[in-house]
Length: 437
Image (cartoon, rainbow, N blue to C red; front, side, top):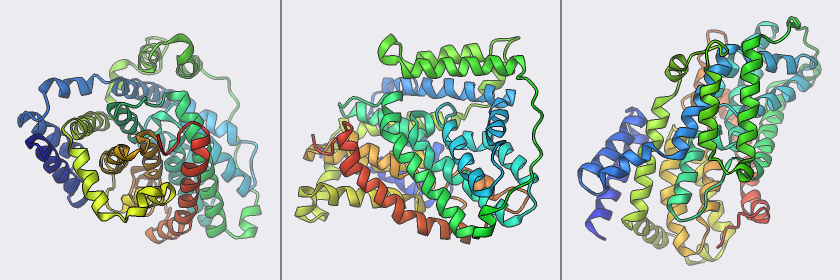
């Protein structure tokens, strides 16, 4: 290997150790790794600056601003509670909550942002119900569906943007907003419904599932002017995302127009200064740094060195049997949250290690990267495995215990593994995402 490739591998390995074995913030490790690559002149300084100017970075910034306006206006909470009003039976309420949570993935970036947005909805439902077992099941439902439904939207998780960026760095076209929905939404919906059924079955009896809840109906007052304004802007932005192929404007530019409009005073409920403060800058800096690392792995030939090591470990028939190789990748992606607690960090580690190298063996890097990033959405085994799980576990009111998460994960793991393997080998190839080029 050339000296540059060796340096990249060393830095990447040290970053992986930091993400998996230390309590240091993931963003700090990623920034230190990126700075090291620049300081050793392995990567030109300009590439670090260009990483912050990526289209996906600006898409995420604009989406956070729009999400801040949705939160400040109270629109998301109001629409969610209004959609749940007709459902009083426990089982039907749980399924209605599932679809409401899925809907939030199309506009609110990151799973932690959606958890913060939906927390008032859970509190409103829990306060109207005095049954501790039902509230425990409801508390399990929110983070589980938030995490599993994120795969249905390009902006549902920062890991998705890492995957798209690495697809383009590898010379393959990335997935746009609508293309991601077409591929990811059916899988995300099935995983979310599987979680809902598992929670209802494992934690509630038949009588509890059939019970009718007495809930106080919220006042049916008209939407306020700021709420109407924010809703109109949000719908316009989503239409712009979905029709990019027609108008040709990058979705990041559409998002920035929406971010400006949604903070325009005096119409908007939040100023640009307030919305920018609510932006998850740690996630944005992490994405920029890991994008730089992924590009360095490809450009220096370090990814080729990784695949050589993997090929030496794998039996010869593994590469000749796509479903077997993908099965191993699915298992690694689903279990990686036990070692790497950050979803974005998991994508930053697994895609260069598994997707990029096998592209040289005839596999489509887009398909493998998509499989990996969808697998990383399963991460509710421990309270520390994901921020939404930790948020709902740490509430002042009783919610769930680690043993409840372990039981739910033990049941969900084989189900989601089967879905992921089936989609990657049969469904997604029929939809234009074949495993082999």
